[in-house]
Image (cartoon, rainbow, N blue to C red):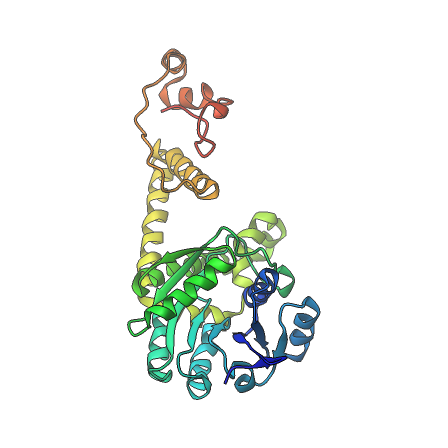
Length: 342
């Protein structure tokens, strides 16, 4: 039964779990002022619930899950993957026919399996995940504009009704995001590379540098770069383990790719190869292209050397000449290109 307000039937959107993504979604939905729609938050932590209340992100906040989802047409889960199984099981007993469940975290294959196991056939599950380009660690990072202009993955389950998919697409578009359709295997492979692999790399880096006796002295020279590279290893170890295990197969593939990439760099370094510089430049340009959002643009890499480069090569050698003759000319090229000639 839908909630009412002054005799008017209300649509209800319920957000469960409540990290900075869920709070931001509540703020964004309040910001666009959906007509005849109640936005409800569910949070068990009293202190967190108090902080969220001060943000005015929701029309109401419930600590009772059944009350929070009563009559909800759309339920959004923003909870760690290790809590999701229990949530799907509980929601299966509470949700109304025709309601839609979506989520905002990684590992859609596992979530889709739990949805199929626990949700009734009258309830549709459609995976979802906004791709946020900055780290969201604390509730204070929440923002009503967080979703504007970003890609929002939409991963329909095999049994989801078409209207359910349209509902999640509508949610993404209403907060300013661009829907981006993936199947569950594609999503989990990409997520393993973009979200889980960095945790693995940070863990390997910290374990490699701190396990020997030299760490007792070496830690005195650990500064900002160590802090930056090791920061992900400060995340909760149990959460990191569970997140990794839920998508172990694609993650193992990307760990193997990382090992191959490291071995290539090691070989180039050992051999004093010209390709060593090229590896750094390739990484620099790829990140710059991602930052400038031009990854999809086709690029011709076949450029003839300039007269200045040819002349410098006679005196300096090709490798150094390419570096010396092109510094300062970045304004003549695309912003993502490293300032050099080819």
